[in-house]
Structure formats: C-alpha cells, structure tokens
Image (tube, rainbow over all chains, first blue to last red; front, top):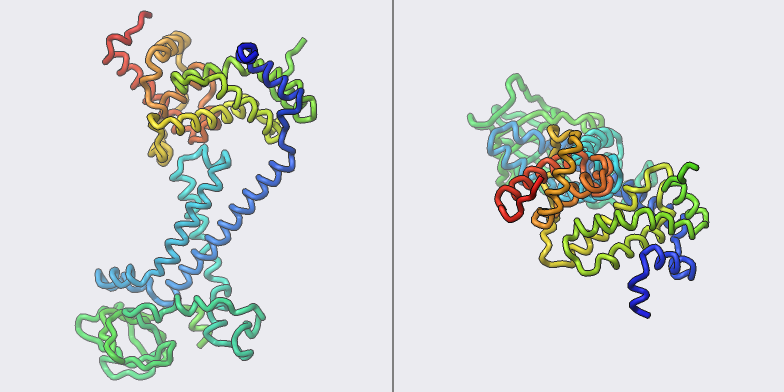
Length: 251
Length: 189
C-alpha cells in the first residue's frame, strides 16, 4: 500500500488531496488583509521615522548644536557628545524597519540596497526639514515647559494633551558645553546672557574665543555660546548668533 | 486548438475549478523537480520537497496576480522551500548578508549567449554544479536550465537585477576555473 503511494506521481497525490478536501485554498481576504497590514506597518514606520527625524532637526536647530562644529575640533567633539543619540539610534532603527518592509515590493528589491536606503534617507531628510519648519514641535515643546494657563495637562491653544514632557529632557539642559540665551549686558570684552532657565551667565571672551568675523553683539541679541561652564561663568571658545526664527518670533 | 495559458488555468482554479490545478502540477512537476535536484544537490527527500511546493502553491493560489506570469510565482515558492531546506542542513553555507545586494553593478548587463555556449555551459554545470557555492548555483540553474530572464530570476530570488547579472558572470568564471583545476571534472565537448 505504501509502495503504491510512493509510486504515485505528485500530480496524482495533489489531485486526490484536493478532491478529498485535504487541501484548502486560503481565502482572498486573507491575502488582502495581509497586504493591508503590510502597508499599514510601512506607513506607521514612515510616520514614526519622519516625526523622529524632524524632532532631531528641531533639537539641533533650537539648541544651536549645529553651530558647534564651526569652532574647530573642540566644537566637533562638543557636537558629537551633544547629539541626541537615543533619537538618532531610533531613526536608524526605523530606517531598517522601513527598508525591510518596502523590500517586500518589486520596486525596492529590484534595485540595489544602497539605492533604496539612500531614497529613504532623502525622503526623510527633506520631509523632516519641512516638518521641522511647521509649528508641530514648537507647539508640543512649548506646551509642557509653559505648563499652560490651565495648569499643564493641555495645550492652551490647541487643547492637545501635553504628554510631551520628554521635550524638556531633550532640551539644552542636557548639553553642558552649549549655552544659548539673550544678551542682557555687555562688559567689554565679556557679556552677560540670560538663558531659558532664567539664569544669568557671564560669558568670558578670551583671545582664543572664535567669533565669526563681522559679528558685533548688542544687548537683546540671541546667541549660542560653546564653552565649559564653571558656576555662573562660561569660558567661551566660540560664540555665534542663534539664527532661530522661532525664538525671534517669540521675542 | 490553442493551449490554455498557465495564468488562465490559475484564474480558473482561483474561481473554484480546483481540479484544474492538476494541469499546473503536470506542467511544472518536471521543471521544479529538476530545479530542486540541481539547487539542492543530493537531498534524499526531493519528492517530498517538490510536493510541498505544490501544496503551498495550491493553498496560496488566491494570492497570485493573474496579470503577471505564473512561472516566477511558483518558482518563488520553490525557492523559499529549498532555502528553508538548506537552512535545516547545518553544512550548507547560506550567508545572511551579501555585499552583492548592497551596491549597484552597472557592468552586469544581460548578455545573450549563443546556443552553443549555452549548451556547453549546461554540460559543464551538470558536471560541477554541486561544487559551486549556493549563491552562484541558483541563478545559473534558473538561467541555463529554466531559461529565465534576469528580471524573472530577480523576482524569484528577490534580488536586484544587476546582482543577478554579476552572480551569473562570477558563477560562469568560477565554473570554468573549477573545470580547469579539477582534471577529473573535465568534460568532452
């Protein structure tokens, strides 16, 4: 009997199994649902990626970290140690997830991996920059820091719940060597700034301090200072204007 | 009378004419068995593996898009089955990541071998295929025995088209080297 089964061709065995109902086709909806879940997964990964990438850009712009490398190797070191690495790693994680999900489709797998990763990076950078210029992160970051007239919990204008306390932790308080604030007094050659925590810091300018040529600081200018803080004094090795349209708008 | 195409048969199976599936099995049984024998070298249970391929094809037939060609679809199922089979075999050297997939290979365009070249290469492959690394073996089998285009092979293996080209190119060179270095493997033309 077993010999007979072995001698049977695959065609015969499959035909018998189909006839007897041992084999059943999966319904069409199963594949539609699977494809839909795949698309939803890829969309969620894309939106998470865009949100995180734009948040990284927002933090870099708002805190003036981007300016640090202009002040030489020390500045590059400060830049690298001040990057929000957790967010950067999360961005990389979501790029990998998105790449795995899109590689399921022929438009992605027929091209070299490098091309599809570069395409994702390009989309993320461009879309991230666009989102960064929208009020999204400003609204969310202002919300918890201000607390709002309703005592926190909800944004005063949008009524969006303020569950974004982590914005505060991602802010400049983390960065010991980068200080931004508004100049309140000038005591040549030094000056005094007031930072976001309403602390007064004396910025000490030395012959080694790098200042972009043609920069004349006056009271009321918003600046970013790169230098080590000791008490309320910061020995600056670089100072620059903080070109932050948001801050200027808020002033 | 014009023969009904694979895609039409698959459509009829999808619409409930399940017995028509036997026609597809009949058409592909020899091809998939040959593909399995060449890809997997000498497994003991070729028949079971090929049968599993058709079982999976039947179960998932409703996922087949009838506007596309049927053969890359069923070969893709076979490829997955064979790769799973190789993974179970601890001696097989399947790499997780391959740099061929990462970078573009602009030089690896589809080339048209003459009929004589093809038939020579097929004979060489028959002799030395099991000595070839898996990553070169499969595209060579699909190109020279199953007569698929680069694009179809790319769809079966889910690889960039240029990677298929470069693997075929390297596979052919390696095959010629193997023949030259192993006098025992010499073949008569």
